[in-house]
Length: 479
Image (cartoon, rainbow, N blue to C red; front, side, top):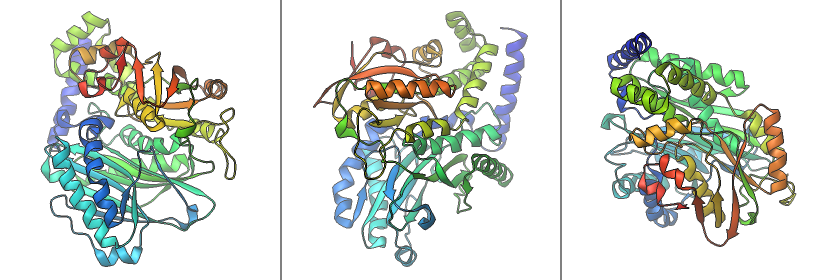
């Protein structure tokens, strides 16, 4: 280290002061999808415990899917957004019954005390969903929910995009993904921050092959109106370049940093939810290596602590200048929309009236985001199959290992707007792999389905190098 580190440290210190001048501690912000409420220990147990109670009231929580897919024509889509207080949500019965929603896409931002375990989270979410169900006065499906954590109690809210539509032969896909920031070492109002946030929201749609007639209902907030305006402009510009429609709508006003969107797109094939058709011998392929968030978090810590920077260089041979270059490459990668991948997936889905054919069609997809490698365990549970992971292709194994060894991030395989996992027969995987390489992607085969009847995932022992969180590690059989 030397003058190079001193220059980068000075620039980083100035950025930290800028954030603090906004009233934001950049070190309290979780980068990308790391901001999610813990799925294994909090979210899934909480939702499981309230599901049956809510169904009595007419509210159904849809099964875990990357996107909510439902019948409807794009031209018939209606969206009504409401934002509610977490402590005492007041739901407008007259307005809701006049709108008559069929579905809802929900974003919850809760204080970390409510996300500390399933019980406090269950209480607040259960109360809110009960009030929505009573206000609607009929059946409604929460097609997709996204829950994130805030360090500040004043920043809590529920945001609901109520959805109405007319049935038809077409299919619509919907999703919400919202983050606080992707790179605290960069201006929060930079185009790349907004680009990653929108691309991440859209990625779950692209994962199921939906990319046509994109409609984006943004979610953004900031400590100042000037910054809030810059984020909105950047989002609108990104959506326009994609050829999507940017829809003005109500926004949170808590003064915290926030960026994301509820998004819709048309799907012209049956969604790759063929869990019951997954067979032994089918293969898993990721569209590219993953583990983006470890690189960003290592960079932040190296800039914060000269000793960490020294250990990084001595243990890995990676200089701070090299780390900065890799960090910028990763952020650019995350800002890239996976539209080409969506088209490839769409091309290998059965059309309406066509049966799933394992020799031609993709069975299942999912994206590698906050849970990282754990998404393969989720896939195994949904398909009720045993999977063997043979490879863990990370963007930088050495930095992911460093991040784990130094307790910088609990899951160094995590990403944002990340790789997409594709599960299909060997024949289909080979075709998809060839198409992806033709589009400049770097696909990697990572494993194979071993048997049906039990949801298990065997993984190499080296997974311990990349995942410190025991709640995730215990979900794998390490060999």
